[in-house]
Figure 1 (spheres, rainbow, N blue to C red):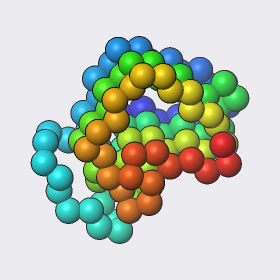
Figure 2: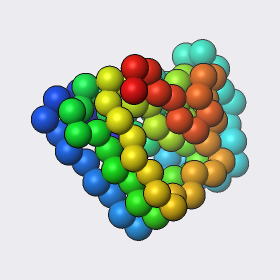
Figure 3: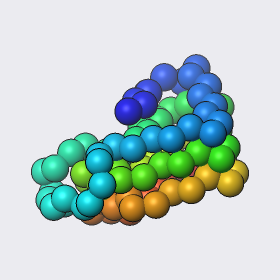
Length: 97
């Protein structure tokens, strides 16, 4: 849904609802998708700030069902992250954070 490799991006989301798929889990395989079902943030100096969001049904990623954060930071407060899965990092995958 959100993909960035920019060093200058600053992303903030509040009270959003993010659904990657509609409902029941599908089959997760090593080739189903890439990294980060809902959010892929890489190299951001300021990172991603999430407040009171609902992130659900993100289950077709290899790494990070809801979030894949790399060389960045994730600040989350009061979000609901449910029914997410991945081969590595079911809800959140963080590399060099």
